[in-house]
Every structure is written in structure tokens, then in C-alpha cells.
Amino acid sequence: MRYLAPLLALLPQPLGAEVLFRPADPLPVPHIYSGEWEHFVGGGVAILDCNGSGRPDLFVAGGAGPAALLINRTAAPGDPLRFEPAEIAPITGVTGAYPLDIDGDGHLDLAVLRVGPNLLLRGNGDCRFEDASDAWGFHRGDAWSTAFSATWEQGRAWPTLAIGNYVDRRAPDGPFGACDVNELHRPSGKGFAPPQILSPGYCALSMLISDWQRNGRPQLRISNDRHYYIRGGYEEMWRLEPLEPRGSDDGWPLISLWGMGIASRDITGNGFPDVMLTSMGDQLLQFNDGTHYVNAPYEQGSAAQRPWFGDDGRPSTGWHAEFGDVNNDGLADLFIAKGNVDQMPSNAMKDPNNLLIQEGDGRFAERADTAGVASLARARGAGLADLDGDGRLDLVVVNRRAPLEIWQNVSSGTGNWVAVTPRMEGPNRNAVGAWVELRTAGRTQVQEVTVGGGHGSGQAGPLHFGLGDHDNAELRVLWPDGRLTDWHVVPVNQSLQIAPD
Image 1 (spheres, rainbow, N blue to C red):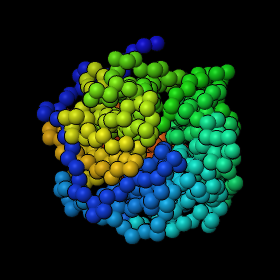
Image 2 (image 1 turned 90 degrees about the vertical axis):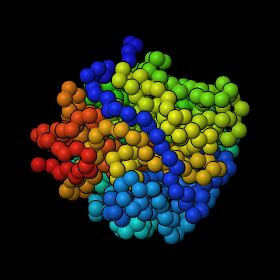
Image 3 (image 1 turned 120 degrees about the vertical axis):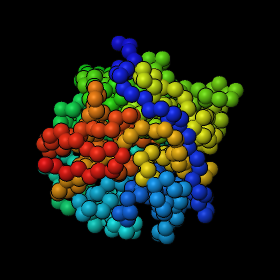
């Protein structure tokens, strides 16, 4: 099957919405994700409001150097972005981090992936964190962890954590063919049971638990780096209950790619989340019809298989991918972090990031050049988030052996928007697994609350919806426990918290 994403031609386009970013004020000391072979991969950022200011803060992996916690000191919406480093105990070996409220106390915690023992850091609501790994019975391990996702399974008070491990550093004949196993940490009381091992592993670089079929049974997708599993591996899908991998005899086509990152968003308007898989060479966009995935055609403009400027015609290397409506026209755009692993001669050395703007016919067009985000650093993790509260998504990019980049969205003529934060009573306070639907004349946008995906990077914050020229919208939420709210009219150009009726 071959088709372009079906989008409504009647969707209004805002006037003069030229996408433009400017660099944020520099940090007092540049933050760099550093290290040798064990930090060729990783380099993520966790985006979270850790002090209740309404402005997202940043916890940034440092690799061989210490991780950094950057507090958002931006004065007001639209003012220049400003971040201030916080004093924290040094944590080295960090490859990535993901925010979630593990213990349900209303404060965001951090799952920190490392080369070495992983950590669960409990937040106290004032951007202070303490290591709660032992108190929560968390088995830290001592692997090279590079992927993470989480969900709340029905009837459980604590989350289920999935951790993906890369190459087994201790394998005497490694690294090729020495992929490590992965782990599933399920809750036990007020903490975690010993991990269940997901084997064989194929060198995971990203994971995402999503109810991609919208049948109430989330599944774990794992994207793997075939550079190290060499043969026999593939992109995985695991059922959680019972815990078992899907295969070709279970309707899961086995495909292999140099999997780096996962991004998920309904971009076709059918209510099911489509998926973007980054890789070396072609980036793979797959449309989801609720029963299976279909590869997008080349004409979609999402393959991003070569650098879009310069004379280096070798394949690109994609890492973090993320959907977000950067011009608020009602169409999800796509950012892809790019960069050579190190000095890999088969791939482009000068490999700029992609900012693919979705157009009215569903195709994507490159705008990183005119938008001002044409960095040639070796990018790894990233995030799109409204850092100053002005309704426009800003951009954070973590680079290997180069300073962290923060870009402020200063696009003029952008459309209206709504930012939605679902909140629940009980353990799953951030409503992980909820579906938020926003309806305007002729179209409904859908987003799922998930933890994971990307490359070493995650965020806990509002779901951002662009509305184009629409000045009114209706919203409803399908909550993780199955409750469905009625449609409610919501104000535009505001950030809203939504609770069950």
C-alpha cells in the first residue's frame, strides 16, 4: 500500500507564519556531552518543571562529565530564554534521563540511565533530588543503558519501567554480536520487584510503550542498532500481558534498521499514532491504521536520508526525533537530530539537523536553514517544549563533544494554540496512557500521554496543540482507567489542566 497522509484541504493556514528560531542566552559555562566509545550513543535531556514555576527546566546528560540541572529563569513569555545551573551532586556516566512521578507524591522524579548502575532520583518539588533507588527496591544493574519507557499497568499503584541496554561491555569477543539483554521492572508494593529479563536483546537505542492499536493493551516497541547485532535482530514489539515478543507468526513484520530513536504522533488524522524511526540513511516514517504500519513513500519528504546542504552525499545519521507543531498551524512538524557517530567514514561528517515542516497536503518540507537551526555539531538527544510560556515550541539539542544548544522560537504570525496537562488523583497523577482529543471545525487532533521514545530524552509537560486560525476548540480525554469525558469548549492561547469529570 502506498499513500500520502490524508489531511483536510479545508484546514486554515495562518498568515505570515515563517518559522524562525534564535539562540538563547549562553550558559555561564557551556555544557558538553563528552566521552569516548561508551558515549558514542546517548546524550539525552529530560525536560520537566521541577519547581512549579510553570517554566520547564532541563536535566542534561554529561557522558564522561557530570550531568547538569539547568533552572529556567526566563522572566516572562517572549522574553529571552535564560537558564541558570543548579548545584547538584556530580553524577557521571549519564546517557539519558526521563521525568515521571514514580511514587505519586505530586513531584516529578527522574529515571537516569548510565554506563554503570542506573538511578531513580526522587524529586522534592524544589528542583532537589535524592537517590531513592535502594529505598524503592530498584535493581540498578551495571550495564550500558540507552533506552527507557514506562507506563502504569491496570490495577498497579506504581509504574512499570522498561530499560534497554546496549552492548555488553564485558563480552570478551565484543562489541560486534555482543548485544546485552533488556529489563522490565514491575512494581511490588511501594517499590519494584527484581527485573524480568527481555531476551535476546538486539542493542536497544530507544523504547516506547504505547497503546498503538487503541484497544486498552499497551505494547513495548524497541528500536535496535543492527550495527552491533549484525544478523538475526529486528525492530521488536513486546506484549506486556502476557510478557512475550511478537513475531512474523503474530502479525509483526520483521524489519531491521540502524534504529536510534522513536517519535509517535497521529499525523494522518485517523486517531491512531503514527511512528517515526530514525536510522543511518533513510529515516522511516510509518502510518498506523490501527492494525498494522505502512511505510510512508519517499514523496512524503520525511526520509531525510542525506544532508540537505553541502557537498557530502553520504548517508545521514539520525538520532532523536520529535513531532511538534512549531508554527501552530494545526499540523505536526518533525525535528530530527543528526550527527556522525564519531568518525564513521561511511556516513556524512557534516550532517545538519532537520526541521521538517508539514504542509497542507501532508508532505514535509525542510526549513532548518531558513529557521536558523542549521547546526553542524554531532547532535544526539533533543526536545521541543514551550520554554518561555508564549505558546511557541522552543528547541533543546544535546551535542556530542560540542556545547548544548537552546533555541527560542520567535516565529511571527503563528496560529492559535492550546496546551493541555491531564491530571488524575491516585498513583498515576500525570495520566500516562491517557488520550487527549482536540476538535476544531472539520478536524480532530489526538495525542497520547507517554513516557519514553526519542533518544535518551523525555519530557513531562503539557501536550501542545496548534489550532491555526481557529479561535475556539472542544476537548475530551479518554483516561487510562477507561473513563471518557464529554466534549468541553476550551479557551485558546492558554495552558490548561484537565481532571476527570
